[in-house]
Image (cartoon, rainbow, N blue to C red; front, side, top):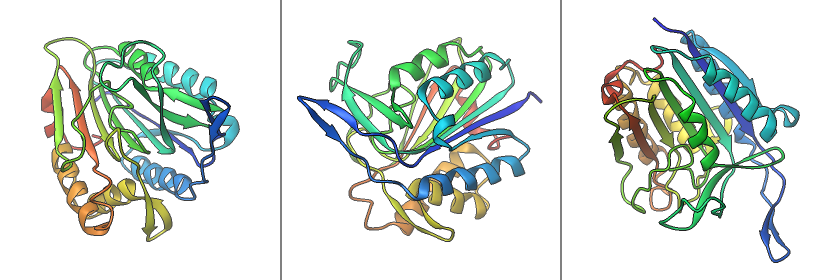
Length: 255
C-alpha cells in the first residue's frame, strides 16, 4: 500500500474581491467552514490518512497553500493517495488565460489573501505522477470545475461526469458542492453550522456507505436531497472524474 496524504483547508472570512470599475464584492463569514475542516480531519485521521490542516489566516494565503500543495504532490509516487478538501467561499472572475471558451470565467477558491484560480489547479495536477490517485472535496460556490477544467451542463440532478484519459497522469475524483453557475449553502448540522455538501457526505459515511467511491457519492447525493429539500432547486452537487483509470471509482474510499 502506498502512502496516503491529505491537505485540508478552510477559509471562513476572505477579503473583498475587486469586480472592476471600482466595485468590489464583500463576503459574509462562513461559521461552518472550520467545522467542516475539523469533521473531515477527524474522518481522515481515523482512516489512517496523514493529514495537514490549514484554517488560520496566516496559513491559508495563496503563496502558503500553493507552496505546500506543490511540495505534497511532488512527494507522491504511483500507488499513493492524495486528498484535498476546501471549505469556504468560491467565486468567478473574468478569465485571464484565454482558456475559458464556454463562459469566459475562471472558477476560484477564496483564500485569506485573495483568489486561487482553477488554472493553477490544472498546473498542479500536471505535476502529479502517473498512478497516483487524487480525491478532492470542495464545499464552495461555483465549484464544479474549480479542480478540473470540465464544463458540465447547468442544473439537473447530481449525476457523475466521467472523462477518462487513455494514458498518463493521475486519476482525479472531485466531489463539488454545486455547478459552476450556482451557489453552495450552509445548513444546521449536529455540530452547528456546516456546509450542506460536507454534512451530507459525513452523514453518508456514518451510515456505512463506504464500500466504493461511487456508492459513497450516490449516498451523499440522496442524503443531500433528503436533508436539504429546500436547496435542491438551487444547488446541484457534482461528481467529476478525470484520469486513465476509472476503476478507481470502485475502490474503497481513502484506502
